[in-house]
Image (tube, rainbow over all chains, first blue to last red; front, side, top):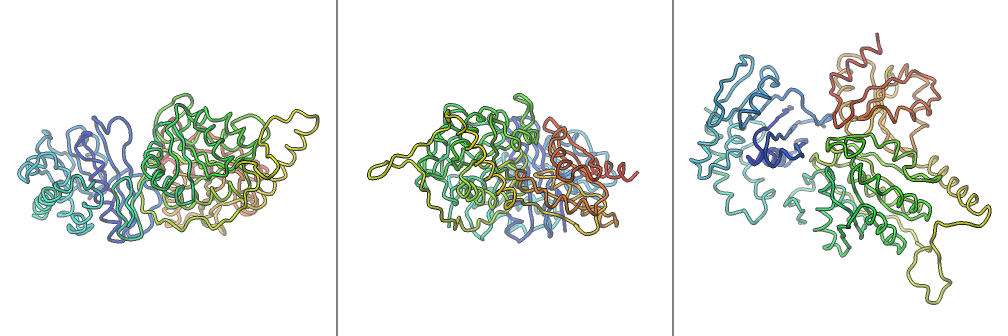
Length: 179
Length: 359
């Protein structure tokens, strides 16, 4: 298996972190992984992305041109990446803040109210966790439990009180994605 | 269980780390106990990591007032026998050149890390490889060389950083680790090997001369013919290194008609190109220099016997290509494809270039 995933959205939506979280969990499942961030000023506002490759074999190029999966957390990144998703790939888009509908007919589209579901889970800021849950609901790349269990390792212990609400958001997204 | 700056706890043996952090951790494990640097993207994770973990290891971290100060602090700590390192990115490395020349002249073991970005000038923070000439031809003045090491993955960054400290001590000279913005920023699983086993008696350091003859370390050699003698001694050492330390990786050595040549991030992209074209039965291979100086000439000479042509892929306007031509004495056509200014070649672009060569 090999999945090439692009996460994109506003700086501040946790775009870097969601890539890190899934890459870390996949590594713990024995997969080969690479993670590339956008490291310019856009990370602090503007359209940021992170690229993750998860593969059962060693990864040569860590760069992604046509993602097999794209998670667009806001309008600008949806407009930028809709055309780039590989045929038969998956586009997850944040219905809560993206107004326009997807045009592609040759890819699978999951239009999901990410921000609203995050608010329901307890914090509107953890849409990234809802999106990751939805992604794993649609594509069983790794288990939901690996993702949840990995969080405590990559989140500073200062914020471990927030782990339960993040877990809730992941499960909510997973449920939505599995439908 | 060791905890890292990113908050990653080693559960298994492998840890997910970016290249910059892997480099810093490997340096500490290799016994580096002095680091000085001044911030610049895309290498800031190195000083950030060092600021937390170097004091824990009993070493010294200094955020210096300038790049110039940092390289000269490395000079000062190296001559006490301490394993010392500085890091920067392209514009900052330019500022360090005077100090590097002095390190070479005084034969001081030291590690200089350049995580290259787009140039010239301040350029941009995208990945680049346009400092190749500066690194391998001697960016400072005088007849000197550094060993220049070019890793291509986070694991290799860790392994080769440890090797670099050993080489620096073994040959008493500065070693440069030459990476690019992608390698510094990218995260991959890393498994840290054991630190150095090298035991070298440093009988030249300045550690107080009580009870022995004072030692002098200097680069000013004014007496007639003495400097030439010294330079020839350096050259002898460089020739030994050329003989013993050439390193590279070759994919599909035996039947390749076109050999791609790339180091660092472009070598990762070229590896994908080679794998994909091989599935289609195309006879394409790759040679990836791991030491840029000494350049792996021996391997190139061998390959030139069977390969029809070379295609050098760089994130520059063409620098390493000159060493390829020299290594094979222009015995085969050497083509070039490069992107510059922080841009990266895509697999498709490289494949198109290969098709052009095949006609």
